[in-house]
Amino acid sequence: MTNRQKAHRLTQGELIVGLVVLAFAIAIILPMLARMGGRATRMVCGTNLAGFGKAMLIYASDYDGGLPRAGGPGSAWAARTPNWRASSQADAYGMTANQPGRASVSASLYLLVKYAEVEPKSFVCSQDGRAREFVPQRYRARGELIDYWDFGPNPPGHVSYSYHMPYGSYPLTTSSPPGLAVAADRNPWMDSPFAKARDFSLFKPNVAPYNGTTEQSRAGNSLVHQSDGQNVLFLDTHVEFAKWPNCALEEDNIYTSWDGADKARGKPAAFGSQPADPNDSLLVNDPAVAPR
Image (cartoon, rainbow, N blue to C red; front, side, top):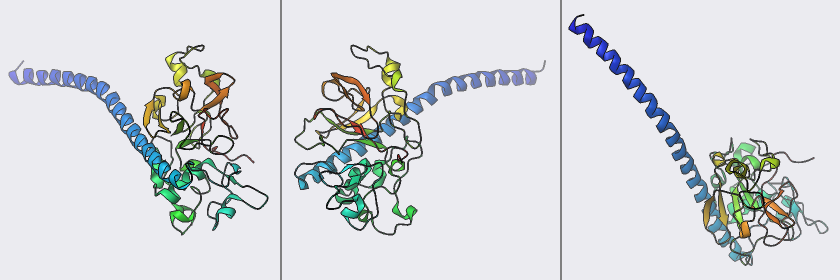
């Protein structure tokens, strides 16, 4: 064998070793990059929610301490706001002398766009399926953002976050306990336009009396962020990435209403759900499909 042939064989061996090393490096680096990307998305969501908190305080200062709440004092939760591009508040929410009106959960959040200069893109998480920024012109609406009352005719496609139920007996005010949750990633027990709700029977919190496993506890997390947890805005305006949903007052689950004394698991949210008590955090979003 000539020296040239030996050199050629050596080069092939080195190539094989190099490929093995490269494959090994890719196996290590890709998951690391995915985790880094996930953390970056969490940070963006956390920044979005922190912005909501500041804007809500500004809003509350003008409305006797009340957090954003669309419609009138007696308005009820509607899957869709009656007329999102109406020329008046009464027409938007269907308010008359005899009717207190109706509004979606997203309509309450839209008040931050209308009156607190929060941009619609802040309501979209990049990991939330195909959710995209609300742009009125896509619906052939020619006015400014402040002219409207909701995120278009199908708000779930433009809002990635859940909000404490604003309609009913227990809306939040700045005098509510500071440990209550105000907003977070989507509720996992409600269908989104991009994913079906989780099976509630698979969820067991990692606290007594359930003592669920890590995977059983993760089943209660929001569907975004690889189900590792959820960004949560609390009433004291701090934001944290909570690894488990039972993160509010007394291990209260932010995505369920109390079931008697059970706060950690509770009852899964659905369209029409209400908090059980003034201290019951219940974060909901509008259903993917409006009930007929």
